[in-house]
Length: 163
Image (cartoon, rainbow, N blue to C red; front, side, top):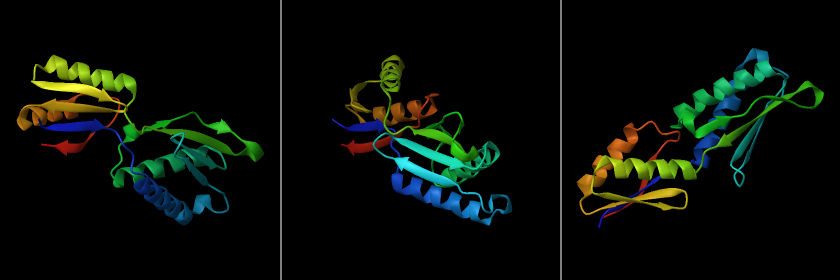
């Protein structure tokens, strides 16, 4: 029986490339001269931290990062932006939660959508992924198209196809 997994993964190599592109853009801007901007990623906690000199520069860094990330194939839905916080020496910092892996609520929402669709597809939650299984590959393809059109809070990628 053919199957495929619906997942939401972040490519950390591409995330590093987006951060490097943002740093290059910051280096060329006159208003960022002599003002430090720092990025740090905690892959275990799935959090990225950004710090800048003030809130205005932090907002500009956010816009530059979103532009670089979308060029690298990321969706805005893959990042959950926290509120800016004041740090030491009048710096501002912001935490960005990386949505790596489907949350339990989204997995349940996907299985509910599959059951309500009336397609002959079974959906089972496998940790932070949802496995779609059917007797015919065409049913899975129809289900994949339906899930792509659904307004889910996370981006879906379909991985591990088995026929």
